Image (cartoon, rainbow, N blue to C red; front, side):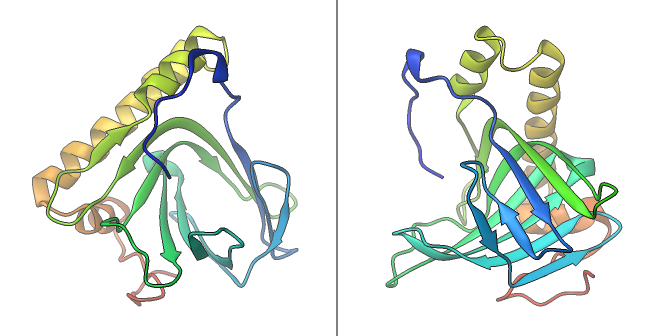
Length: 184
């Protein structure tokens, strides 16, 4: 969620999360199990909304969109603090449900930031390359990550709006707390 340059020796493993729909929990990338307010499963992905104990935001909404290799996030910032950011898109492998009803997320470092009136911004390319050099991602995974990012960037540019592109790409309107839709 931040723009930064990773130190060469600060390479971290891909971030892995578990979305346990039956238990109504989300195990984040640090292993913290957090209660979930809402899950919604569709034929194209999984929606989640939960509170957050982060100093800058108090709610997280997201859609796991496996076919696109994307996790679309909205951070609800506290105290009126809100950067010019609508969607934050993580690139990775997302799948589910497994036999126990859980969904899984593996973040492949690349992120796209949606700022109104601007093209999608690709960040953390340095982290992807460092992870590959460290053997944390295969060449194939890196190629998939770049392809997913380029697909999203070109798709959003073609319609001049990432939300419109996402809705068209999945064939349904993604709904958010501040934008109810027909998804689900």
